[in-house]
Image 1 (cartoon, rainbow, N blue to C red):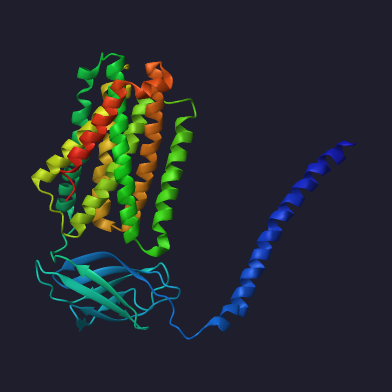
Image 2: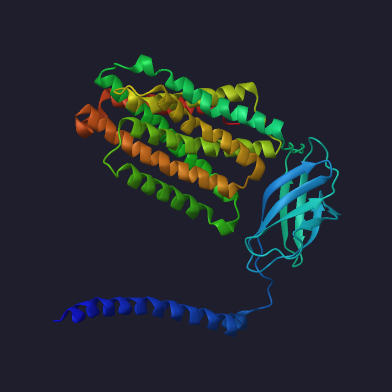
Length: 396
């Protein structure tokens, strides 16, 4: 066989592979064109109006009335014909005007003189007669966005996220020098608090996904985002073997930070709705709830002596996203994006649970037996119980 024949063989295989890739794509294109041109489904039409769905994503109350952001999810573009507020028809303006195509959004402005502290019901009627209701439980003015309000939100985010994590990490010197049982207890404590955050984040993600437009396929989105986050972080974390020390602490801080991002989105949304009821007691509850997170981040570092800037960076990674979440939630909140953030956080937390459990078994030296040791069980129970107890202070 000549050199030319040896070169021609792989070239022919490559062209054949490309051909078999193009043929099914071309067949799919032809099928789509035929379906659109001939419209074989029209013979099944019975005169019924198209399926229409409308999701309310945001409500703004100001001196000039009410504005609501709606997202269409019907089979065809839908046209808003009339709007009722408290059973009375009101003039409205729509931006952008005209029919709303599937998946698109539009702002509806109503010059309605809403009453502070009272409930109002909005009912949107389409040109097909379909109706979609939205309730404003308590009418309060939506806070205006300016430098002062953003600074106040940032300060709250610091107290909710960064400060408690930093306080928890300040226990580091006192925890150094603990024996094997003490180390097992602290690592299991970390697993316990992360397990609670995993359950909490997943439940909140599904709750928010249920409020999102059907087009986003909320439950599937949560499962897929969590799985993708978990697998991606596992692949990154295991590139150079199982993480430990600063690397493991970084993954813990990242998982906690993504969860705090989701919490910040929820708090920011409460600001945007003018229903933030965040008194001093509630802020203190958030701080108590998050202090253990700092201890969990410090646990893999007890056998090391990292520089002070590493602790500062870890605290910023874990607590800083709360500030970002507050800003995003107050400026551009939508339930599907909050659900997505929480799902990604849940996947990251699950990855950290796996890695911390593996690190516990390696550092203990007894393998899987260490998972059933009294110190491990005690730490796991303490972590879950503390997070559950302090969560009662922040659930309103």
